Length: 391
Length: 136
Ligand SMILES: [Zn+2]
Image 1 (cartoon, helix red, strand yellow):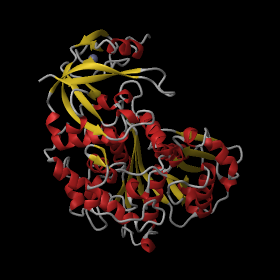
Image 2 (image 1 turned 60 degrees about the vertical axis):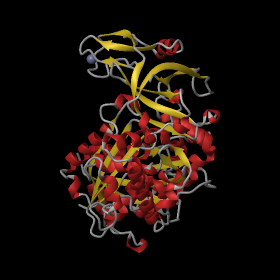
Image 3 (image 1 turned 180 degrees about the vertical axis):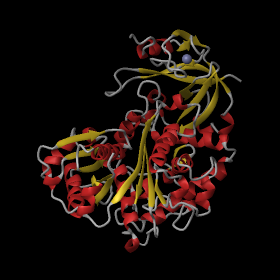
Image 4 (image 1 turned 90 degrees about the vertical axis):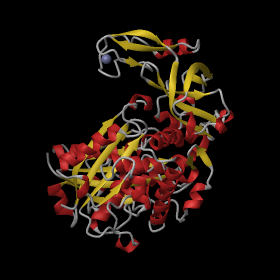
């Protein structure tokens, strides 16, 4: 397989109530990525798009074809990926495979969502579609509830009394908001305190509003190319060193592993193995913090901390710039925002720009970063992992 | 190859407080909710059985938000229960005030009953769910 690199990136401001359509949001970030890659839309051989609920948000299915046409990628193969919140990462990983295989040389990958157009009740209903509709939705399944079940399980399994766990969870949210203030693309530019988290609305015990990411609108795009093409087009290609993807079934079927997510561990092992690297080699990480407890579970599953200890790591600042592993220096899903189809592409954008050293002007550069890992979780059952490298 | 225990049959049984699952003739594991294969060893060599309906609470949450059309259910308690035969299933705890459910519920023995979610335009019909009551 050939080596594959990111050569162009684009990212919208994530927000509530975007005035733009999904095609418009995608078109803007795609042209930014195409311009940065020093190509034109005519050079794009195929388009992949992560989009989850466009059907409900705008009554728009198969947005990928209308988007490709809109930006002048006329008649190319355009494919949509749906794996709930991991859709964007799936779209990227798939494109990497196509370029690595030699079938295509240059591909454009976008991700878009306009979740706030649905309003909170319908958004909650449609997001719940990413749990098991027959056997778990009837009990009132929502994603806050899933991570709430895992939080109580985590507390019991690792012997962390709930009040202490709640403080650890709050530390995760506080850090994310702090970094989001420095990220111009972030949806929420407001620092919060531990007290703000602990007095926020109780969503699903023990998860409160400030333990949870918002509903979001937004888009992100990347252009990827083979190594040979990448070197001709840009000064600093950022390479995919490893990729991985795994799946799992309904929550109850994961009983042997919970609160660990087995599919995440498998997906990241694929990435580390392909890259010939270990968690210790990583200089930064963008992981799937849809809820504060989800971030803690993810950081452990990716191999950064022992099981049951990542909350302490957040409290001690080991997840900040200068700490053991800087995590979600973008503000994460919690404060950067979580337009679900775009999230994985946004993570690739973030890590690419960190590895190119572009974040200094925003005051959140991880100096000298060579390797970064992204982790995306979709619903109950899609986990994607990718390692990016400067070399 | 025919699907041995369909959702339709599972759902109809649950509406009569009967929890149906599969018992594997190869490894002995129980699979519930049902699947095409044994959840443990992927064998299709299994038989339909009725589970006892008794189990212990593994984890829980009380929700103060709900999906569109289910706002009238708030607050409600979701429990994950490990059935005596081994499988975990998701249901509701209906025998106590959701606002009073706390960590000490974990490990308590519960008995299965059912409540029916009356369907919305996306659900393809009504859906029974396990509704558990505390035994002690
Ligand atoms: Zn078996």
